[in-house]
Length: 136
Image 1 (cartoon, one colour):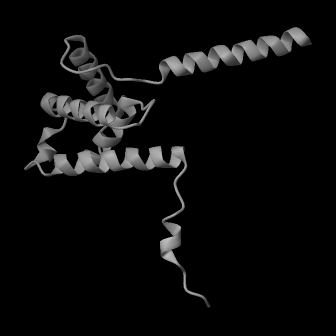
Image 2 (cartoon, rainbow, N blue to C red):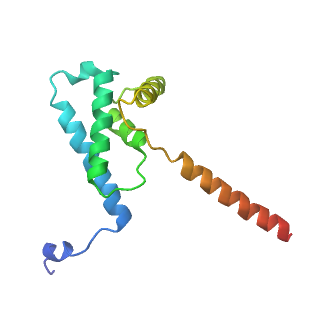
Image 3 (cartoon, rainbow, N blue to C red):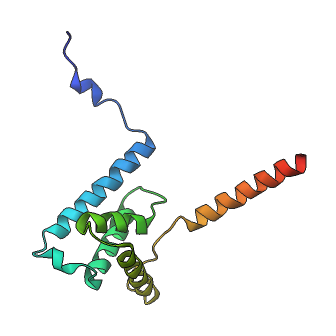
């Protein structure tokens, strides 16, 4: 049996989507690790200062990276669930309202969602369906 040449594997590069996926999970791990260094961070569940901190860190990291079209709130939720796995949907809704308020008063930047992209996709789908129906 021949030995595996691990060095040659390093020459194989991730595709853009795999690289993006890998980068996002690295960001999550980095932020979670940093927050877990805070003594008794477990007591900071639904803490406005922690929410602001996570949002600002996400903004800074995304501004410094080449990642595009990242849903910041989804990224926030992944970080939050990694820190507080027992967070309920009701608590997530409360956190979303806090984030919306903080954005409204200029404390943080807008949470990017894929709503606009979803609307464009729906419009495209409707056009295709209408085009098919008109051919019938």
